[in-house]
Image 1 (cartoon, protein in one colour):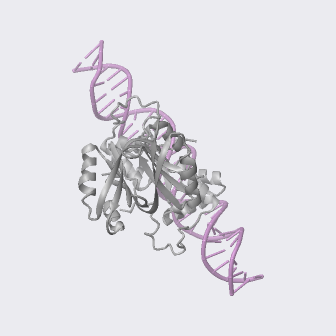
Image 2: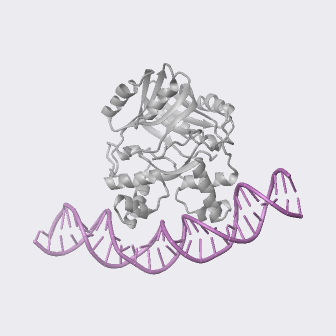
Image 3: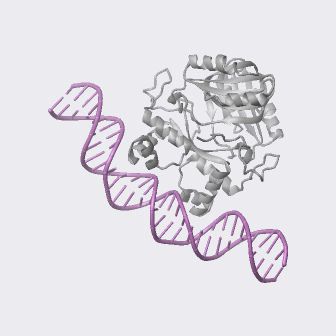
Length: 172
Length: 172
DNA sequence: TCTCAGTTTGCGGATTTCGCAGATGCGGGG
DNA sequence: CCCCGCATCTGCGAAATCCGCAAACTGAGA
């Protein structure tokens, strides 16, 4: 029902204040602190957050609502793909002839593609795909991705072990 | 304060029921439906979730608590790196001589490394790094990552545009 | 100084969360 | 077949939290 996009800036008409630098609404220290609280526990009560950052419960609530409305953050459940039945994952580097963005859109439309990014370097696109098993993985890479018009070649990196995965952006 | 890890199964002593297949506690359809609700809105009230999945408020609450305790999911705020002041991101492929896992651990310890995964293919490791600007990115790649003992070579893919980023694992 | 827009604060009232005690359901002995 | 242990679900009050709103506050500009 909604995009699920987090980081593609655009896609939001009211970003008039946003200049070409990609700065965005820039957050003050208090909003950063609020985000930090919610990165530890997305369900932490507003009053507890307020106590931690030095603000009233209502003020925290308004700030959180604005951050959500602006698309700066979203509060979601993230799961371990392994325990949810997806046992094969891979990063796929893609080389494209013609319009890269249209290929990216086509890949982004595939539900198995969890992550699609345009890159500079020896690949034009990097795509993370998550599958149920080897057969599924094979089909996605060799049948679906390579069938997209404009895809010249692909190189796959099957995941052996995920070592780190954080959601601590904006905390440092 | 806590690991922030999602998908590295291990790291949890109480995983005795987990066999070598990597199956995990396997979830029934109701838990899947609960997760789906929380992927849309991590703060959705238990009663609303219960109405959606056909369970009482208390039952939903118990299931959610168990899913959190088991590490199957976590409810967190995720942010757009751009609006939080990180303007340069890159995927880095790493080739290793010697023990790959110890290199992975060293990279995982770096705060700029958002994502570290051991892979099969022409790279031993893939690392996503998020930086404030070009200088920062350059320093991380050329000074820090290549300084790790065992790193033979790296190849960088600077992000030009993030096209898709979802958290819809387990929903399909 | 005055105005205005954006934030913060302090409240009630509605809603939600929480803990617990009592059902319900389901195998595994005996 | 019955009983028991274990896990889950349900139905409550009580406590905490969320929510909307009006008033107070703040800083920039006329």
